[in-house]
Length: 238
Image 1 (tube, rainbow, N blue to C red):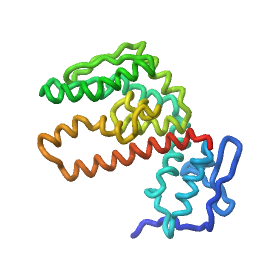
Image 2: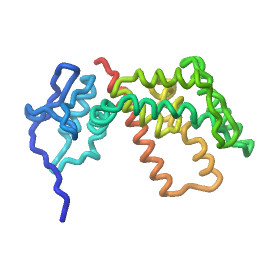
Image 3: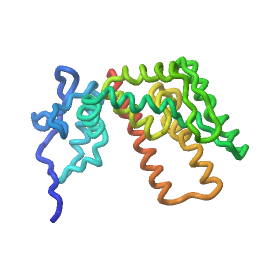
Image 4: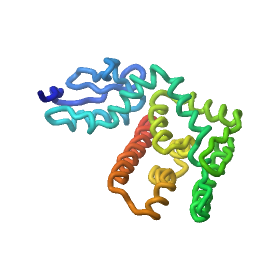
């Protein structure tokens, strides 16, 4: 038996100002999240992007083609109801940040990691006021609790929409510092993603590419770039 899919029932999607932000109406009917919560987003730009996704639907509704809508739903239905838990889960990346764990060899990889990752730790010290320690190998080395508390405070202070985007920026890159670098426009999202792939790219150089692994990496890259775009939409003032 084929799975039933909802079909387009509206003629036009419109952005409407509402208390708390903006919503999208389909022929006058306000869009709701999967949990039946009113879809209220913080900026007009985000609402416009969501309305465009609904307008682009033809026939059966395909959520896979509606990334901004999906992210907004996650911010409302998931992050908003467990903000502290999500924030702490992401803040915990600071104690195992990918940038801090360096290869014991070969020397070329050691040098590349230092050349590409050390400037990010320097940036974090200058801009975030924290210095994470590095270690050789994969054995966990605890960071200074005061440093982790400072980073955690920044994460917990994020609003639901910012945190939804930040969750993906950090979890996909494996680095809390890279997440902050993307959020604060220290480097382009593409460059930050490339930095997060340093070890994988090294392995490809040595052993060649794997089609399945490359396809998965591209899927993650697209998700990372979307997370950055969603973050920026949540901050737009125009």
